[in-house]
Amino acid sequence: MNKYSQQKFSMDVIYILRILELIDEGKVCDKKEISLNFGIGEPKAEAYLDYLDILNLIDKTNKITFLGKVILKLNGNVDYSYSILHYQFAKGWNKGGHEFYSLLVNNFLYEKFSDFDNTFNKSYFLKKINKLNAKGMKTFNDLMSNSLKALVDAETGFGKMGIVEKSGEDEYRVHSYYLEPLVALYIICDMWDSNQTAMSIDEMISDDYNLGKMFLMDESTISEILEELQVKRYIVIEKSNTLNQIKLMDGVNKEFVLEEIIKDA
Image (cartoon, rainbow, N blue to C red; front, side, top):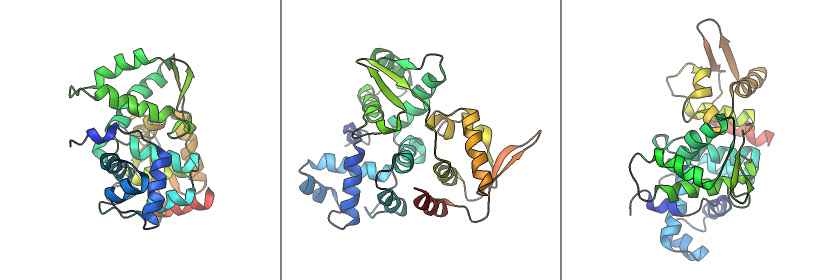
């Protein structure tokens, strides 16, 4: 089975979190047990294990990660857990994200968000995404449509975030998402290389698979979030004629920020 075929199954966040709960409780640990427990086929069970891996909620041995435990503690909080999961899917295939979800958000949706008209229909969507199909995949449109469905569906997907709203029978509307500052800080820490000393604010705003494009945020919104993080002494903003960057305060890392998120949620 190729690496794309399993991603035809819906990105049902409720389903994903329920499987995660059972893994944490020791009731399931592989695709066979998930298949038996949920009454689904093994290919679908394997696909959901793949989603859990992409989301960094389990490791390669199907053990729950520290992030996975934090997500369970957040108990479906949209502003924290859903936005973190959205990031894990949208951060780019080469960084461990979901290839089609990442393409949809960072390319099609960001372009539409930046446009004067933030609405589109399915015909426009299919026409535009064809230009992103660099590999000539036969199933590309279906896989991209699956990602769009996940972003729209408020019951089982990421629709509660409001990034894509279905505003008519065949009309969709794209919106910016205001990211909780601590979630933004978690993402910054996750992207931070071990030998890195600073991060460019310009890159946060305009680079693919960075804060601006993943959450459809403009420069003023990102600046507002960074200023709040500086006030709370998590980061230092450095601006001059030659500098436009941030530095992390001592002791600020992913694990520390996740603990702060649990306190704040």
